[in-house]
Length: 407
Image (cartoon, rainbow, N blue to C red; front, top):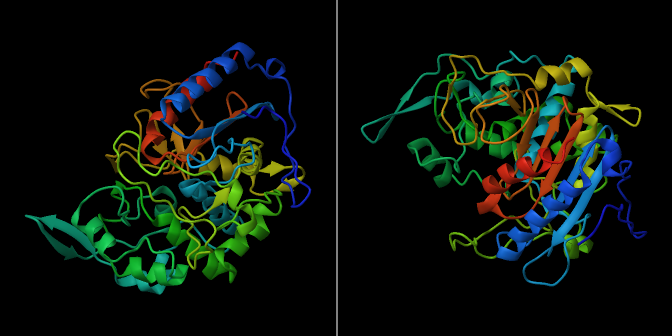
C-alpha cells in the first residue's frame, strides 16, 4: 500500500503533483478515511478487485491519495499511485470540453447539424422495431451537436442492450480499433438510429463521433488536438491513446475472469497504438494526471494560470440539458440525476441510492474507473480499478465512503 506522497521517477517526465495537505485541515476526517481504506481492503481481500487507487481533494489540495492491493493479479507488484489505467469513458468529458472550446472559439454552434461536419450523416434513417423486424423510417430532424453531447442523438452503443439496431452495431464490428476515426464515423452513419434525435437519452457512441468533429474542424488527429489544447496546458504528461512499451510494468490489469460471474475479461491492450483514437473510451491515464483535469473543472476552468474553458461555459456544461419530454430509461442514469454536456448531473439531494450534493457532476469508465466534482463541498474524488463487472458496486460504495469523511 502506498501513502499520500507524489511518486518520482527521473527517467521520464512527471505529472506535476497537486498540493497536499493533512486531511483534517481540509475538513476530512482522518479516522473515517482510515475506515474507507479498511472497507476497500476488505473488498481486495475478498477477491472483488486486484487493487485500487483512491484520491480525495478538497479546497484545492489533496487530502487522501492511496494505492491498495496488487497492480495485476498475475504478479506480486503492489498497486502504485502512478499505475496506468484504461479509463474508457472517462475520456468522454475531455472530448466534450474540447467541443466546448470550439464552441467558445465560434467554430461551431450546438444547434449545428452533424452533417455540416460529416456529410455521411445527412441520409441516416431511424430503425423502428415491429414484431421482431426493423422498419427504417425518415428522421424527423437532423442530429445536432447538442444531441451528441447529451446522448440524445439516436446513435446507439452495442454494449447497452440487445435490440435490433444494437445487434447491427455488433455485426458491423463498430468496436474495432484498426480503423480511423473517419472510417468509424462513416460506419456509424451507415447504420440506423435507435430512436428519433432528441426523443430519448441513450448512452452511445456519440462522443466517438464528436471526436471526429474535433478532427474535421481543427484539421488535427483527436489525440493531437487534446494534447495541444487540454493535456499539455494542464501538464497531464501520462494521458494519451495508448502507453509506451517502457510502461508495460505500470499497467493495472484485471482478473482474467470476472470474480462474480466467471466470465472472461478482455480489455484493449494499451501498448498497441490504435488507428482509432476513440473519443468515447480510448484514453489511458493515471490518478494524478486525471486529478489535474478534475481540479481544473472544480476551479471553474483554470489551473495554474492556464484557462482551458470559460467559467460560464463550464457551468452550462454541468447543468441539466434533458427536457421533460426526453425519455430516460437506463440503469446508467440513477434517480435524482440528469445529463449535461458530457457529464451526468445530480438534480436532487435525495432519490439517489447514495450521498452527494445537488449540482455535482461526474462520469465513469466501463473497466472500473470513476470521478466526480462537487462544487458545493469544493471537493473532487477519483477511484481507479480494473474490475469491469464490479464497477457499479464500487461507484456506489466509494461515494458513501468519501462523503462519510466530509466534516
